[in-house]
Amino acid sequence: MNPSPEEIRIGLIGFGTVGQGVGQYLQERADALTRAAGRRLVLGGVAVRDLSRRRTVDLPPGLLTADPWKLVRDPGLPLLCELAGGTEDPRAWTAEALRLGKTVVTANKALLCDHGEELFALAHEHGGRILFEASVAGGIPVIEVLRDSLAANRVERILGILNGTSNYILTRMEQDGLSFGEVLESARANGFVEADESLDLDGWDAAHKTVLLAWLTQGRWVSTGSMTVEGIRRVRLDDLRYAREMGYRIKLIGAVERVGTAGRLALSVRPSLVPLDTLLADVDGVFNAVRIDADLAGPLDLIGRGAGQDPTASAVLADLVAAARQWESSTPLPVHLAPPDPPELAAPAEQEHAAYLRLTVVDRSGVLSEVAGSLSRAGISIASVLQREHGGHDRATLVLLTHRCTQAALDEAVRALAADESVGDDFLVCPILD
Ligand code: NDP
Ligand code: HSE
Image (cartoon, rainbow, N blue to C red; front, top):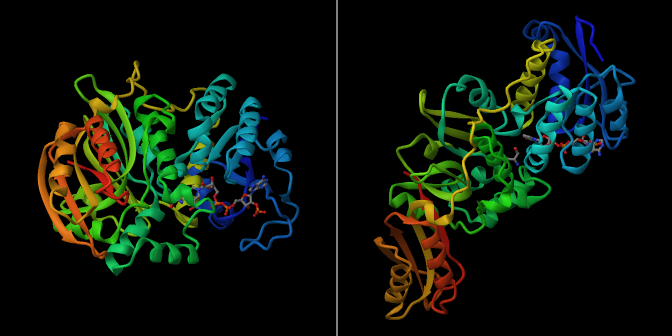
């Protein structure tokens, strides 16, 4: 298991988009990486599913195998790099590697979101390590910033544009005047959308990343089942236009917030109205951004490429270098900024924000007062109303901005509106960020 002092041999599982990027630069930039790591990082084996598939990056002969377990169990490969994707096989490989005391580098946010608690405990128990810079926001070094650079801070809030595909779709809709369906077709054609489209379109990929950011900064693993997760499918081109008229843009935001006087923890992924004069509002296309409100350092904005071969490989390579640098250290890599008492989760009644509601209603007298009544009964005060013609003959679009209200009140109002026959189920509700 002990490597020679001169080199560390890597077992790489996955030689697809990210794996080939890592393989390419491990070879092409070997000297620079050796200088950074203090020793050579050498590919000792590469596992794929289909040995006959043509690869764009060449490997020295004899490295490829279709058996990932061979790499996991090989004591001559003390550094395992998991770039296969999925959760069940990677969970088994990672757990076994950690039991063997290996260091694991992964870009797999779904794996860590679902099984991170168990895997980090195993790492701790067996003296192994897990590094995961590439799993959140691709090429942006947000994990290192949170874990190391902001180690002395309490992080009060993180807001992130964490899914490049959603941001690309919203940006193209707005810039090119296209519908969600039209942009989705072109995103599919360009290979931007995950094979499981729900990860990108329904907010789950951003939720996995949000959970990791919450664990890093608040020390609590939150299941995606106990947070609000909504993707971009309900956002219409008109919403983007109305939002802009009112001084906002709509972005899919993953939020980690301490709320209320007790400072409880709230996590969400939702299309959100972001004020035009903030940096987040200017982040377009496949770019990601993370806004961190830290108590000592103050507000910090990180913007960069959240996906793609080179940016993601850059983050994986940074982890491989970090692992090699600290190889002999007996101090476990600090894994998070956990406060001694992780916060409890906030109830919807403790979460407050102003909101944007766009409703499609039957165009007849009295409907506006019905809608206002539903909001008022839930205790929500309306800040402004806009009524627009709708494409359909007997329909109108109502856009309402509310004053600050609780999420519980908003949920109650939305339930009442959804049950109202004058209001169709084609509606959008978004928080408005401060
Ligand atoms: P790809 O689908 O391009 O590549 C996956 C690779 O893993 C392929 O080489 C595949 O083999 C191999 N593989 C999959 N299952 C097995 C298995 N059971 N046994 C052996 N090999 C296997 O995925 P990506 O490179 O895009 O993503 C890799 C990871 O990085 C994922 O966790 C993803 O979420 C994460 N990530 C990806 C980003 C991106 O921009 N692509 C950005 C940030 C994170 P074969 O080629 O033979 O099919
Ligand atoms: N599908 C993800 C995205 C890939 O669009 O951001 C990077 O995690």
